[in-house]
Image (cartoon, rainbow, N blue to C red):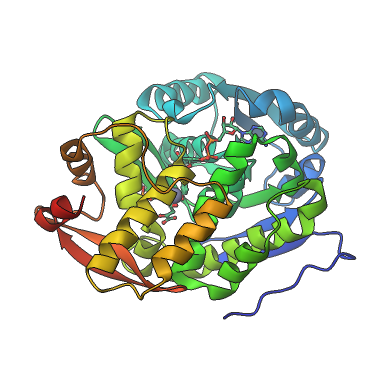
Length: 370
Ligand SMILES: NC(=O)c1ccc[n+]([C@@H]2O[C@H](COP(=O)([O-])OP(=O)(O)OC[C@H]3O[C@@H](n4cnc5c(N)ncnc54)[C@H](O)[C@@H]3O)[C@@H](O)[C@H]2O)c1
Ligand SMILES: O=C(O)C(=O)C[C@@H](O)[C@H](O)[C@H](O)COP(=O)(O)O
Ligand SMILES: [Zn+2]
């Protein structure tokens, strides 16, 4: 069990983590009421210049004004672009429109992008930033729990293609990540719970301390009273992600473990139609299905599947699919997993809570299990 900085009630809940790579480094800022401070934070990193703020049709109307005002006061020339909310926007069309918009505005390599939203906005904007003029600066302002604990950190960006989830993308790190827990007040309940899918994932693969925190977290009741505990969960999830990503930015080794539950989860998202299952829900089902397989293979210790099931139930996350689907379609989707080869796919399997390993599974065997 690892030691974490405890967040005290007296602290005004502002914390930082620094992500460090061989040629790039950036800060994750955690706190409350950070959106009105964004201009000041960004001006420490960027010269006064043009900024394109990108959000979606749910988040934009709630927060774009605060962010725009703060950036304008700090001397930035702010433009705004809004995409339709939802997974459907992680596509070539939105990518193209954003690229053309940047071109039409005359953005240069000195200008920057800011993603204000959940993982969809973050993944799309990061990908656009990585390719416009072969790469410009960008900042992540994640507004969903899932984006605050996972997608805004680590530099995976991308969009979906006909063949599958996140098949077109890049590794492109942001210059700053601003995690304001207050914005979670407006997140719909099912979206809030979805975020726990990724927290449970990172806990079960590598961190028993985080697992215990998840067991203790009072998920029922007013979110406002639970800010301290929530911030602790977010911070500790990010500590885990930082450790993994710093050690293996390009997913050559241990970063593959962050894909626990995703081989099946991504397949389900695709075949059921993007948005039917939320990403965190699909990961929850993927983790459960994969653990059933690893129990059968004798890899997972007795009791682990039941513990996982209990925690998923606590956060009202699904453990199986209620819609009908064809196993053959799921298998076909899984063949597009980035860890797949011709006849097999590398899967993450949990041995015990907090420990996991990679196992190659042939498609033949996988079919028999599914
Ligand atoms: N890059 C990565 O490392 C990584 C990691 C995990 C997930 N992802 C990707 O992230 C996406 C899922 O992210 P998501 O769950 O945030 O989805 P999302 O971006 O669609 O956001 C969820 C919903 O909540 C709304 N919303 C977000 N913040 C809000 C707020 N504060 N108040 C009110 N509404 C708010 C959004 O408009 C949307 O309708 C998937 O595409 C997944 O593949 C990427
Ligand atoms: O950061 C990572 O690495 C992850 O795998 C985090 C996942 O939660 C995330 O969903 C990621 O986008 C999946 O990666 P992919 O390479 O399978 O698209
Ligand atoms: Zn994920």
